[in-house]
Length: 402
Image 1 (cartoon, helix red, strand yellow):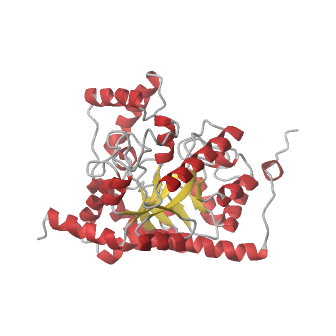
Image 2 (cartoon, rainbow, N blue to C red; image 1 turned 30 degrees about the horizontal axis):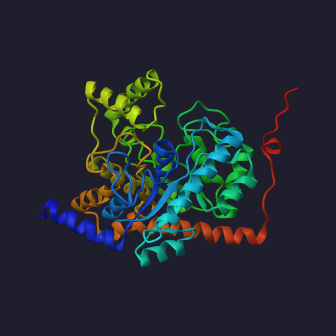
């Protein structure tokens, strides 16, 4: 029987040939929170352990070949404030690419991803996390695409006017008429529809409307851990017909059932101390760690994540799963997946479970590249037959109020 060291050696060899495409990393927001984008004060060229989950040496150690950087802004932001903050997030990604050209390569297409891999650089793409970032404007959606954003998560933790979130009360019942138009315009531009964070009704509506593959940039299996942020089996079963990819996340409160109740209590403690539940600045982390010392946290592991992948592969098929860790977007991470250097531990666990190297290559690299290429092909065909939509939310979602 192979030893743990043998599995880890094989994992690293596999990642050298088929590196990880990670669907979601919140480094831009972490840089905003920690140093207000002053990259001299937090230089990811060096070791940032203890402050960040992400830096270039650990990306290299983890076998990351492409990263979707989240240009997330909190859903409490609205209107022009949300748009401006999203632009600031895009700008800091641009700054990172300019500062580290030997390691990070701007990627807009699947071909760009392959080119970066051939050059030994990490393909850097962007995803907007929440439809509030477009302020109900299809023109703003197109502008984000022009700036390099290649997916948009339809909601974050709160409903928006045209789409329901997984962690809010039902609003429009999934997607409104304008929400369906957003999906159609995303298809036409080539921006991937990201269904992480959205209500199950929104997932189903989007899948019924889209003519391009979707992604779940950082979501796991609801059958394995019953949390509304996860994907139910009936939706996973729709992915083969759609062509999309569900990218498993590492966030303990979404993957380990015992962690769900603990996290609810920890979040309430954060609010009681005047912090947002997602705050990761040092003062907030002191509160988190004090709570954890008094109330030991249930620990997820790489095996926990592998349990989700086993189930998601069974339901959706190997062509339709990927990885989206959510590093620097969560206070806690699983043992063995503490930061972006940890991906070999997950691959080693899957090798131990009998996953083939060809299946692992699909999981890490091939599926994500295929989905982006397919979205590009769909967009090319759609743009040949129709122009931009200038529909407004008032036109499509108008109701008579007497």
